[in-house]
Image (cartoon, rainbow, N blue to C red; front, top):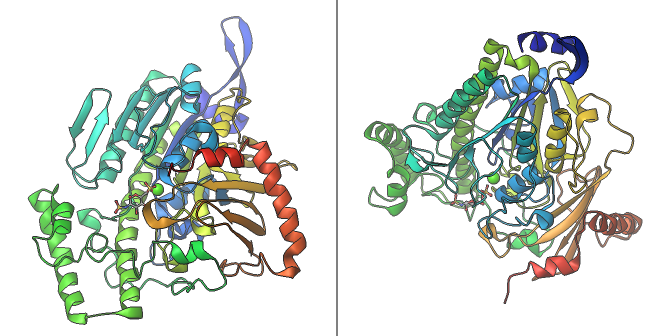
Length: 521
Ligand code: SGN
Ligand code: CA
């Protein structure tokens, strides 16, 4: 093993090993560590150089970009937790893997997934952290998951033996569980694949005690579209329920409660031990006092909410960044780094005030795009940046390919292996298909599907409305103007409609299928 990992960077993934007298060609299968957080916007990873990079750096996550590749357009198939997780496992769109929306029908764990295929090929597999697919995980030698969304403080976990409670902060616990499993897996001499899934920075953005005051006094730069009024767009944008101004709650989201008898205060501190609660009260108490005195309203209140939101959201990310640092340090110290692929991503992107929003679901860039950073010594050129349209649909295929295993015909994505090697094939996808179903539901984002090219985006909102939108990201990078009915775009519109039809045929989606998924009235 040791020899293999030393030779690997020089020889790539294939080398000749002599075993006894017989010389045979053997592929060194890389280990895979797939780190996925929840709702981590690319705007909040400093390697992406967005507006928050200078004030809230993520030095450890950035190490993956520095040693590997940063993907600038990784698009999700359906911007919501469970469906993204199901797509990643199966390499299939929601309408094919059956998991269309959160908390509706449990994931069918009897179907083909990439962890199962790796496991069958001799990999040791594990999943630790958020799962959110409502059925027990399958295809893992070891799993230890948060029930549903999980808790930040002293969280419950479920493993094959049942449910139990851990003490501490969720991100730290997931990290130590993962490191413990990695150490065991490394001893076995078999390749391993770990899915390490953080809960953070999911709503309600509860930072670890030590990070509570991390950004005190920092003035976070505003997104240009914080006060978007949704002019020039349709009913879907106007009727959503995910604005910082109206939807974001002062109490549960921003930790300002009327008094300590308030149910939202009890919910927040209910699981904490006295020390954790004392740190919490000491931090939020004075913020509450100050807020009460200010008596803010209108624009000023929205600005205040945005700053508070960023304080807590980014403080949660600090723990995630620390976690990534610990994993990278362990890999380096153990020498495992040489033959280990490390991926950092999020289940989907997130709005940090763009369009006045938080949450996700829409096909606009901030939630349609998810961060993706991958390092693989000897294969990926350090510090590279990729702008191709890749997708979470491709992850399963990529991991199988990296392990030298065949990719099943019914998987719908494409292996990114050549892309990782810096040789994007000429026929790499030029358009990407998207479909979102969770409506009626949280945040009232209407059902829609669409196609995106490098420049344009065509979206159809259906079910209770029938509206089409077209965006030109070159003339309108902030996606503020629907040009679907602009005669200057009629040729583009026609071309994109054809592309959309073709993608629906390619991926076996249809109006009939979508109708079958509608809620029964
Ligand atoms: C919870 C959140 C929503 C969020 C969904 C889905 N509400 O319901 O704001 O959109 O999860 O998130 S909360 O008040 O309970 O925090 S997902 O990332 O799991 O898809
Ligand atoms: Ca999520």
